[in-house]
Amino acid sequence: MALQANTAAPRLAISGWAVSSPYGLGRKGFTEGLRSGLRAVAPVDAATWPVPYPEAGLIPGFDVRAVLGRKGTRSMDRVTGIAATTVGMLLDEYGTRLAADPERTGLVLGTSGSVQSIMDFTRDALTGDKPYLVDPARFPNTVMNCPAGASAIRHTLKGPNVTVSGGATTALLALQYASRLLRGGHGTALLAGAAEEFSVQRARLERVADHDGAEPQPLGEGAALFLLEEASAAREGGRPVLASVLGSRFRAFQDKGRAGAALERCVADVLADADAAPGDVELIVPGNPPGLLGKQEESALDGLTGNRLPVRSLVGDAGAASAAFQLAAALAEAESEPSLVDRLALITAADRDGTVGALLLRLA
Image (cartoon, rainbow, N blue to C red; front, side, top):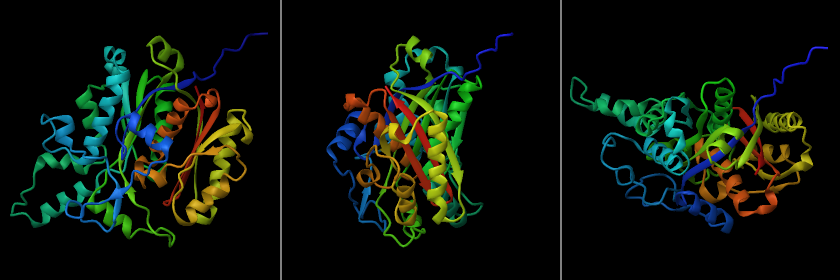
């Protein structure tokens, strides 16, 4: 009998992470803030931010030029600055040996883009003196892939460069996309995650959005990026295996009343693929959206008994970066809690535009 080739997919691992959040720049403040249950949402300075929200989860004192310097930042908008800052922190700590092969190191960044940049540029085009004098250097900010492209250029990442957008599920979609690129041989290491900015225009749009009759939650901002590679490559490069990616699943729904059933199917499928049972999940990090969608997410997780870790209530609604903060919270909790070693963690997300997702990890 002929022997069959081993076609099992290589085990992908998260071997590093960085975060910019309402707790500040870096993992330490984020981890300590979550562990203590400190609410990072604070009153908004109405003079600086004329928004219809009394509170927000802003990165404390964040200024693009102050953090990144004057070179190359004259026309950089806030979300691009947040993304570039977070990519830089990740590479500074974990990327020394990756620099030797920049063509095989890429970036998959989830983002909603910058509605502020789009509206400002459009306003200038309509109100400026003919022939419509706009600043051409600011046009790239109106394109959704600007943060990913600018971050890659600034930090010399020459591998795949991808932008993903999917509302609250964005970061999970970015991790899945990066996994497919790695398994397809399109790179040896990828930075994957998501970024979101706080802005006047985003706040105004969110205030009038459909929240199922619930009071809109304070908005947050920030980014979390994760270094994804094969576990063997991480060890060879001297990087720790922080978690193994066991799989992710996504489904769509038309009626919000069916979001729970769609998410329940995602959870069941990702557990089945990992040959795991609901009782094996030790840590659950839900998205906790407001209104009916949040209730649907809760119903989908009723059969799971693992400990739940709140994130949104502490940092605000981080939009496209929401699930990135949830994943970062799971890794932060694992670093602080030895009992989570070799246990399963589940991150779930539900977006009001009709998508749910679940990501399963084995913590290391």
